[in-house]
Image (cartoon, rainbow, N blue to C red; front, side, top):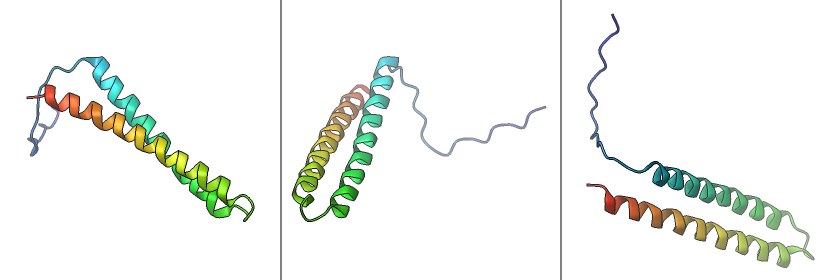
Length: 87
């Protein structure tokens, strides 16, 4: 006989959310995390750049930050939309 499952101490919500909504959240989260990695890589390139390349590498770093911010905002917007649907 299997042992009983202990009661959950947290709040459980049973909500019907369309599978596409969850898929989109996961996609946006993945995009944001990927952009975070790109920011890290761009910063590493900037800090390792020669003086002659430093301005170009800093511009690339700034562009990576802009892309990360846009991905973050897209994810945050989707989270806000979903939380308005939940009870």
